[in-house]
Image (tube, helix red, strand yellow):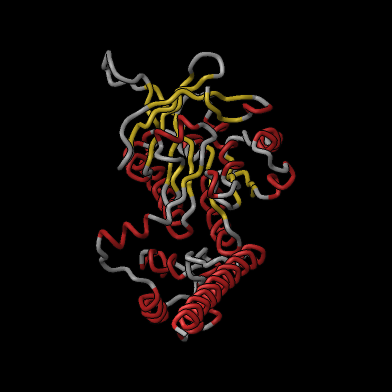
Length: 366
């Protein structure tokens, strides 16, 4: 009897164990199916910005929401981060209306203090887009960081635009292999954008070249005001579709041609500051990597040592960008990239190669 009882207990325990294993397996399969469904439908858990249409639920009229959208404010966050006088400049938005809008926005966006631990958790969402070179990625801590502005400066033909073209392709790669899993936007001010260059880089990464071109949104800016206006259009596109990269090549070329002499320097710097502020806002709101290129000018300070060139834009450019990278020519197709300024990366440099086609197209290791 004791033997039968023991046998029965063992048999029962085995059945319970099997049932639990089956249940666990079933739960895992359900989670997996849910993830696949989300992936196919594109309905991933969205930690992005809150669309401005939700202000309607807070009692804000549809006409006022439309006015905000028309001025380039497509998210609750964009309104929260904007200065009051900027919002009052929108046609049809009075003081009383704005008070109502800001009260509604204040309920939806936390603008107060948070602990360093909470901020560290926010920093976990930062995506790093590969440059195409392991050595370059290493000095960058993994790649070009989302949520901030990265500036590349150097002389003509130093490879700045080639880096931008490579990033347009790598931004589309899956995150697990160093991509951003999103579209890229390219604002061209010097006429250096070349779709055929993207095709050869896409082939290197095993991507369909036509798909890659479809996922790059391009515009050419013709003057400083147009360059700034394009960011209003960019905000509308970012609110609709997932973008992981915004490039402005170059951010300063039109400022050099549109403003001349010391008499216009102050006006130029104020305009440039407004443009860079808009860029920084887009980077933060949509957690995208913003990359700008910058020209250099001869450094004439009478010193016999130190760098002979310096990036243009002065202190405004220096304070507006997060990571500054100097690009200079090396031997043949080699380029030396150096961390010039960064809040968290040590000063370091790497040698990369700008390849023409095949397995070395775009930026790659030497």
